[in-house]
Length: 504
Image 1: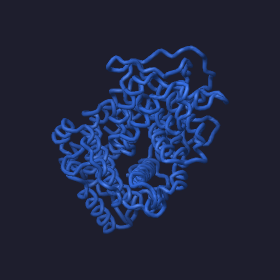
Image 2 (image 1 turned 90 degrees about the horizontal axis):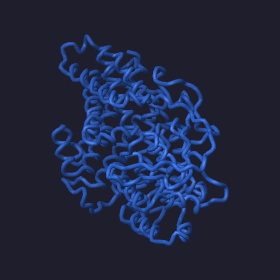
Image 3 (image 1 turned 90 degrees about the vertical axis):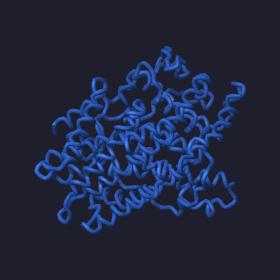
Image 4 (image 1 turned 180 degrees about the vertical axis):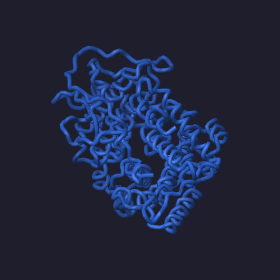
C-alpha cells in the first residue's frame, strides 16, 4: 500500500462549475414552501442569479488543500482571487437599512431560527439562546423605521442563522434552497461590512464568522472557508479569547467570561478539525484558557447521566487539545504521527483516556442504544454521533500511520474506521436530511470508507480468515448505497460512488 493513499485523507471534493458573473435583475424569486406549508422567501424582490447555483469557486483547489489526484485537480485556488464567495447584491450607499430590508417576515424567520437551534446549536452550542432570543425579539418589536439603528453585528448573526436554518429545512427545489441560503449568507457578510467588522472584533461578530465558515463548508466551499477562517483566528486573538478571562477581562461579568470560554472553544475546535481534513497547520495554538474553567449550566434538554451542553463542550475541547498537538502538526508537515510502535501505543492510550472521560451517554454507541437515546433526546443523540465520529476518525489516523520504522495496524484501523463510519450511518438513519448537509461529517465518512476499501483490497491475504473483513466490505457497500441516493443530482456523490466501487 502506498503511504500517501491511506494517510493523506484531506481529499477535497470535486468542484461545482465556476459561476459566471451576471447582473441581478428586479424580477421576484418564487417563494419556497417548507414542510409545514409555511412559505420561506428570501425577503427581497431581487433575483438571485441562477448562476449562483454553480458556486463561486474555481473548478479546482490549491495543491496545498489536496492530497489525492483521482478526486481533484491541483490548480490554483480562488481563496485570494477577485471572485468572492459572497455574491454582491448591495448598493454602495444602502447601508444596514438595505440589508434589513431583505429580511423575511418574522414568522418565516422564526421557523429558520428554530431550525438553527435544533440542527446546528445541538452540535455547536456556542450561543446563549435566552440572551439571543431577547435581542431578537427586541429587534422585531421596533418600528420598521427604527430597525436600522440596531447593532449591525446582531443583524449579521441573524442572517447567518437564517442561512444555516435554510440549509437544513426541507424545500421543494434544491436549487432554490441553495440560492436562498447563499443570499442570506451574503446579507450576513454585508451586515458585517457595514458594522466594520475587520477593525471591530466583537463576541457577536466572531460568533457570526464561526457560523459563516460552517456554512461555507456545507456549501462545498472548503477553500473559501479556510481563507475566511484566517480572519476569524486573528479576530479571536485580537479580542483575547485565547486568554484566561480572569486575566484579560478581570472585571467582566461571570456570564461574559463563560461566553468567552465557549466561543474560544468553538473557534479552537473548528480550527483543529478543519486542519485535520485539509492537512494544513493549526492556527488556534496560543492560549492559556483552561477547560476546567467552564461552569456547568442548568439545561433541561440535557440532563441524562451528567450529559449537558457544557460536558459536551468539555469533551470536544479535551479531544481537540490532544488532536491538535499529536495529529494536526505532524500531518501538516508530512511527518509521522508516531515514530515507533511504543509511541503509537502510548498515543492510543491517551486517546482511550480521553474517551473514558466522556460522560456515559456520549459512549453509548450500539445502534439500538443510539436509537433509544434519540427517542429521549435528539439533541443528545446528535452530540454523541458528532463526538464519536471525530474521536474514531482521529484514532483511525493514528492506526494508519506508516513509515519505514512503523507498519500500519490493519486490525486497529478497520475497527476504528468502522466505528467512525458507523456514526455517519446512524446519523443518516436518524437525521437523514441533516446527514446530507454536514460537509465535514460526510467527508470524514467517505475518507473512512476509502481507507476500509483500500485495506480490504490490498491486505486481502492478511484478512482472509478475519471476520472483520466481511464487516469492512459491508461498510463500503453501505456507504456506496447512501451515496447513490443522491448521485443522480450530486456530482460529488456520483464521483465518490465511482471511486469506492473500483475497490469492490
